[in-house]
Image (cartoon, rainbow, N blue to C red; front, side):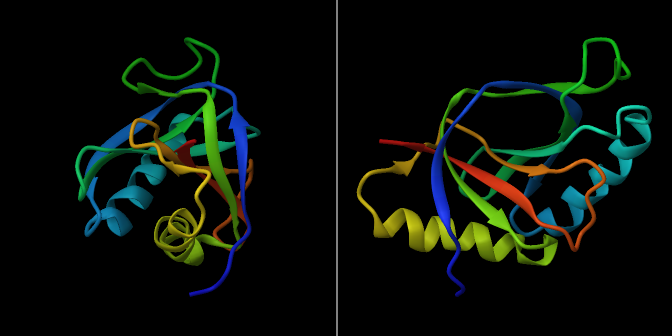
Length: 149
């Protein structure tokens, strides 16, 4: 397992709008990219904003995942759903490319959280990815995992 640099940051609350899918760890590699394909045509005109992939765990296997953006009320279609990222402490890590996403999550949960004593996983907070505007699968992006401590 590779080593990744994790820093704990205070993240400000975000109110996002997007599309949600209920999925599982085994189906996430198909379900999550598919909803990005549904979101992209709906955000025409606001492509210069970061995209957020927000995961809220329902149990140890299943979770709700949103492909979302921060947009003014009424700018996106009414059939889209809202998701909030609460303000708080998050373990932040840069992901070199989309192919490394699973490896970085494994590193944070299996190695980083278990190797230090100052922070513990905050099950009440979502995990989320932040994709820069005009992002592509070979470009870096960031992930955030809620922590308490």
